Amino acid sequence: MTDDIARAADTLLRAYETHEPIDPLTPQFADAPLSVAYEIAQAQVQAWEKAGDTVKGHKVGLASRAMQRQAGVTQPDFGQLTSTMFFLEHQPIPARTFIQPRIEPEVAFVLSRPLTGPGVTVAEAAAAVDFVLPALEIVDSRIRDWRIGIFDTVADNASSGGVVLGSRPVQLSDVDLRLAGCTLHVNGDLVGTGAGGAVLGSPLNALVWLANTVGPLGVTLEPGHVVLPGSMTKAVDLRPGDSVVAAVAGLGSVTAVFGQEDK
Image (cartoon, rainbow, N blue to C red; front, top):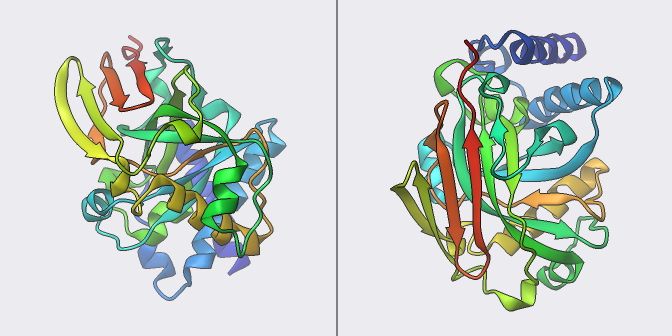
């Protein structure tokens, strides 16, 4: 199994380099537990770190019913966010970075103290949050045509791609994330609406789930790390030249500009 994990990780790493998606991994690992998929993902993160990248946070994926229905799964997953995944608001994001990108509106937690599960409570999670920001997550799949099951997306680092953070920090106590409504516009057209309550009842619940899920794996959510708790709407296809704005009540807005394809 160790060799199979290494081969799968290498195949996914090559997809990043070649921008050629691969066939689903699920048939090769039909009898494998989900923990094997997380080992495949971790092998890729270790390769990135060896090359000089740095883990800057985590994401919870598939946390809302809308996203679970869209992906055909019934449970959340998580991935790691590295420094090369973060892009500045309003600045063109190179289209060549991605294979088949989609975009999602989220809130982002920025932590002021470590969180280590299991046993983390909502109270402890809230106390660990320094501030929150509106965010746009670019999800991408190295699996051809997004034909993913839960094993595929977990092995593919929870389909992580990129992150754009808003620039106006808000204290957690100043906003009710459960009731915070969200709108998503692409090129001025409204393409999605949602609310924080769509994310496991509250984005804060997703932070608790993450801390208690990664803790037994020896992972601590570190001060300064960004945590994306999950999308408030369905993911929307992203095309070169698109301008995307997410507005979250109480948090303000965040804008992502997707660059044109290189000629």
